[in-house]
Length: 249
Image (cartoon, rainbow, N blue to C red; front, side):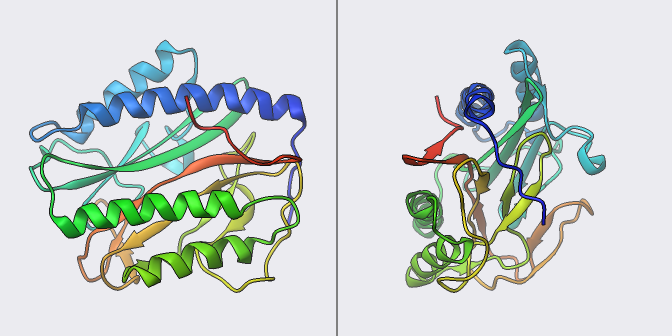
C-alpha cells in the first residue's frame, strides 16, 4: 500500500479545485428536472469546469467517455449519461471530478427529479447524513474500519443496505489512491488515518439488497434486485484540527 501524505500547500491547492467542483456540481444539481437528459447535464458540467479553469477528472479515466457520472434510480455509480429524459419521481446520482493544478477532487450527490416518494426522500436524507457522520468520525488516529463502522451502523439502523463491493478511496495526483475507505467494517481495524492523508468518503446506500450487477451500459453498477440506490461523497483532508471538507463552496 502506498499512501501519499499531502503537504499543507497541496491540500490548499486541492481545496481550490474542490471549491470549483462544488460550485459546478451545485449548478448541475439545480438543472435537474423532469424532461432534461443526463447527457445535457454532462455537457453543461464539462463546459462549466472548463470555464472555471479546471479539467474534467473522469473523462478518459479508465476509458470513461464523459465528464459526469449520472446514475438513475437502481444504478449506484459510474452510470453513462444518456439521451433518455429524466422522469418525475426518478432520483439521479451525480458524481463529478475535477483536475486543477495537477490535483484531483471528487464529489457526488443524489438529487430528486420532481416529486419523489417518501421512502426515496428518506433514502437520500439517510445517505447524506451517513456521509456527515463518516466525516465527523474521520480524524488522525482513527482507523478506516472506525469510519466504515460508523456509516454502516447508522444506515442499517435506518433499515437500508450498505454496498460492499465499492468503497471510498485516497485521492491526489491520481483519481484513485490508497487507502480504501469502506462504508462498513469493524472498529479498530483497517488503516490508521494520519495528518496529511486526503480521502474520499462516499456512502453508497440501497433500499433493498446490497448485491450489485453491471449496469445496462456495461460500465457502471446497479442493484441486483432493482431497488433504488443513493450516493453522496466529499473529498476531505485529515488535518491537525480534524477533518476538513475540501469540496465545498
